[in-house]
Length: 115
Image (tube, rainbow, N blue to C red; front, side, top):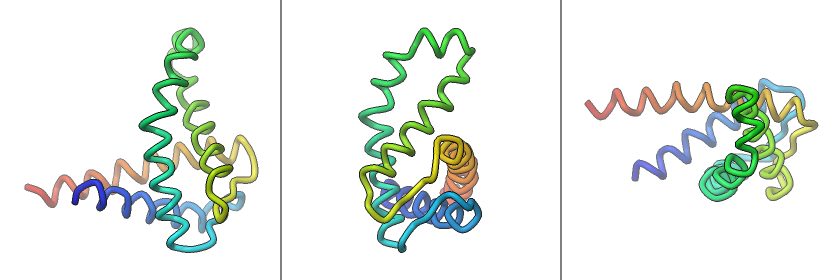
């Protein structure tokens, strides 16, 4: 149940960010849920591989290269989901940073409701 709620909160964040950012489009609510699921799966499967293979670049940049990896994950989701579009790399970078902020805020509200 908690995973399903996190997916829905991520979909809500994707919809809000698509309204705010000019280079991001989402065709509908079901597409936003699919994007949230795809991003979760990419973070589960692809992200650890990318972090492992780019470990020297991550160490040299003191962890800032992880922002690039997050942007790559967003661009991969753009290619995999047909109703989701991101206009470029820097838009994906900004989208990934803002998505992380929105998700952390929404998940913190979820944790406060458990107590």
